[in-house]
Image (cartoon, rainbow, N blue to C red; front, side, top):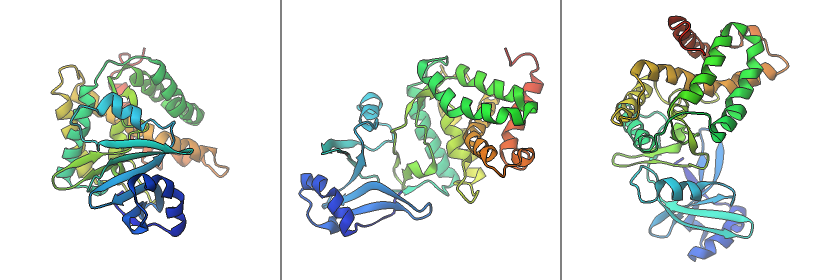
Length: 310
C-alpha cells in the first residue's frame, strides 16, 4: 500500500475538517493511498508538511488504539508508531508515523526471512498455552467451524480432517495474531520493516497468520509471494520462535500446523463455491489447491492412527 494519488476536490472537502487540526488548507499537501493492482482505494492519507505522516480514517469502534496501547507501547516491534488519535463529528482519525517502504508482494527470499523474524519477535513475546477461551471459541465458530459444516456433507471422506483441524485449533499455542497478515500489510525497504493495520488482532492460535501470508493468492489465482520466499519466511519464523523455550512445537508438528493454517484460509472460498447455484461439489476440492492441504493433514492422521483424535 505504498501507491498514492492526489485528492479530488470532493475528497479534500470530505476530510477538510480533520486536516484543519494540522493547519492544512492546500490539497497538494495531502494524497490518498490506492492499490492499483487490487483496484482498491483506502481511507488512508499521506500528509506531507515537510515531515510526512499517515492519517487513517477509522471508526471509534475499531481497535487500533487499544491494540497499540495494550501490546506495542514501550516495545520496539516492527510496527509504526501512533502519533495522535481524535474525532471530528462521527468520524475518527488516527495519525501514524510514515512507513516509507513497498509492500511485500513479490518479496525476495531474504525479505521473506526478515518478515518471518519480525512476526516471530511479536508472537514469541506474547506466547501462551492453547485452550478453549471465549475468544477462541467465538473465532472458530464464526470463521472456521461455520465453513467446515457447510462443506462436510459434500466430503465425508475428509471427516477426520475436519475433526482434527478443530482439535488442533484449540490445543496449539496461542499468541497475538494479526489476522489479516497479507503481504500488502507488510511494508519494507532496505533498512526497515513495518507491519501495519492491526485492527483485527487478538490472542488466538499462533499458526493462523502463517498460511495467510505464505499461501493466499489474488483474484487471478497468483500467489502474492513465490514458493521460495514463502519457505524462507516459514523457516526464519520457526527458527526465531524456537528461541523461546515455551514454544514446544516440533518441526514436523509445525509443518502440519502450516497445512492447517493454509486450509483454514481456503475454507471460505470452498464454502462460497458450494453455495453457488452452478456448483459441482464433485470437482470443487479435487481440482483445487485446497486438496493439497487436506491430503497432508489426512496423511498425518493415517500415520498416527488412533493417536491424534480423541
